Length: 292
Image 1 (cartoon, rainbow, N blue to C red):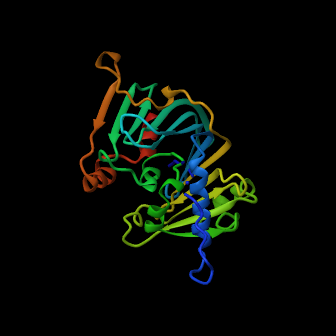
Image 2 (cartoon, one colour):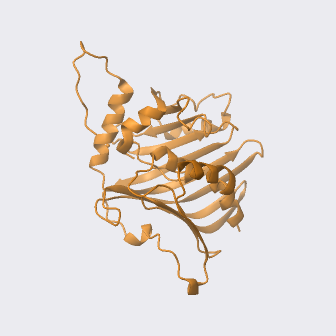
């Protein structure tokens, strides 16, 4: 699965005689600057999982919501993310669903109204900021890269590529060819985990496409070493619109509500990774269990 999410910092001009200009750094700095002007973002989302070994395809559609919060219980600027899925396609079968996912800067919530199941997991310690790619691993959010430019460069090798590269005539992933026409003229950014970053065992690479003019996100594709693919497409993206605060509500249902509740507090980085790999099922498996 997926995620996502989006954009920040100012372009520092360096004399050519003193240092060479890194095009990837220039572009990421442009995203950073864009991010400073983005207080909210919405869009339609299509989230596709292709599981290679099982030849299984899952496709969810819904809406993505993002907002910048500058004053709340955490007393620092951060991003809230929410996704609401309303349709599910399993191979050739489509059904209506209700699946809500929220991250409020600290807590990741999975709300499944039809099953009255509420799962709440603390992904980051108090007074710390979650790495954007860490969140992308956990949930189908489009995640802002610009807000953490230096951090992304520390963990990933970053390349600027032509829009169709890796989609057209890809011998390893021929199923990606249908995406070529959706990113014509877009700027592709490819992130490959650096050895020792902690991400190299999670995925082989992540490719992200931005509209070349607006710098708004259009698509990201994540390839795991197993050959599985997670694809997030965004459509009709709008920024700086007023959003209903209830979209980002992570309040735990009271006991009398009849909801089943599971809460997992933060237990340290090492334990969080162990939970992710052993105790906590991957998000797509949890979603499978909730399928009608």
